[in-house]
Image (cartoon, rainbow, N blue to C red; front, top):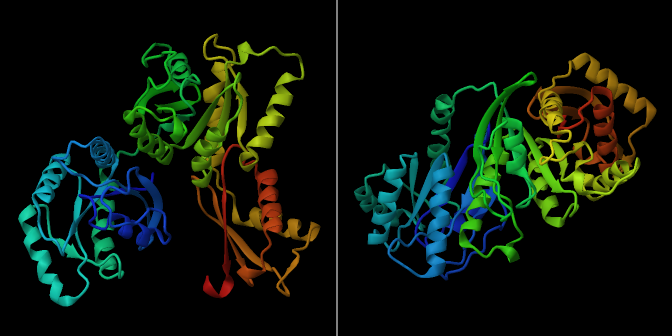
Length: 439
């Protein structure tokens, strides 16, 4: 199941970005007293009581303001509200209840999403009475916090994660393998999905940006049941001219979040770009199953070595996802398009793979015999025991003598040994090191 998405919304200058940065544990959003500083959504992972979730920091909502930038921020916040599972509505406890707060509360009630009402800037006990007037909003009990001082955040997060179980219980357990098609605009994502569906269900146009939202299509084949998610292409910010393009980003990232397999589509005539790296980098950070499709291969002049040379060049530029599976196709002519779901299923099977504890430790023991860990800070790493604790993605825990005795090159060596021994091609994997005394 994908991590829940929590949107932080409210009118400008109530402390949303300060709260976001405090929960993220690092300064990501710009924090200033000037309203409207946070103009784009910012994303980060947070964790509370063993729950991990994705936070979205939004620009402030000013319902009556028609300024173009404020209209853009309001539009972004609306998209965030639509996509979020839980909404944190932040208000200013020092300034008190405003007409704009009432307008935002009305928007949130219409969304029918779980809302946690957060009264910020309650820096001391005598200010807590200021939170009471926010009961008038009619969206639940207010929780008083001070984002700047870090007060009351535990009670607030308790209220947020309390909604996660009810969200999970409402989700239908689907057997479908969810595949997100990601990539720049106009690389052929919609054309490929139409080819796989056998019908023109999605609009296909030479105009980049035709697909604005993430669109789901279901298909069943001999390889299983699939949900194909067509996403809007992500552009470089400097090239985002239409304001609506900005609102596609959150849906693309949310599609990656809930997908099992992420397919990066590349235009063969353009090659891989920096933006492609950023797009697939998000999926890599989440350890998703990853497949790279080079589309429009029919337009390339080639000989018997062209594909190998092209693939090596891609692997060099995308070296952080060397484990990905590659496929060269033409969505227009259908060349090798029939292989897409077959290879995607192989990626998914490895993403869902579980390794027995006994054979896992045998492989680790042999790896250590072949290559002993280096001495780091006067200590040599000792691995006492390893076990797989999760799938989707495969996650392994290594119990060691000292986590500070690790060296990045040896960690990479052990990961490569796991990949070669158990075939984790096409999927990210996680390895966590714990000191045995903490196990």
